[in-house]
Length: 74
Image 1 (cartoon, rainbow, N blue to C red):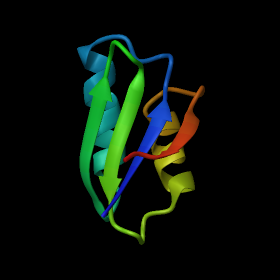
Image 2: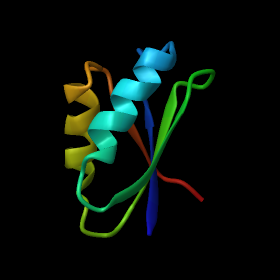
Image 3: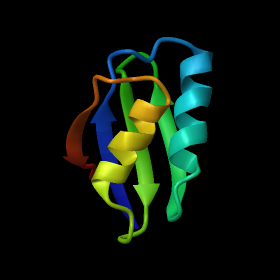
Image 4: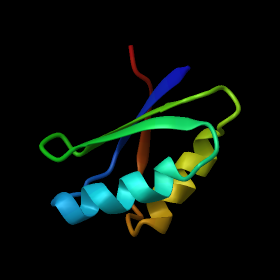
């Protein structure tokens, strides 16, 4: 499993959390999606088959255009 983090400045409420979790969680191979509203960080745990561009696209599909991949989390 791989853990990736993304900065998403637009997330600000529980609706945002739900929208991001729904879109990213629907990707085949994603096992966990966490959204930290205070840091504006989305953490995604997935298998090796998931491409980072698919995660970014899913976050954008949820309505957040400003998405910055931060890389693999420790």
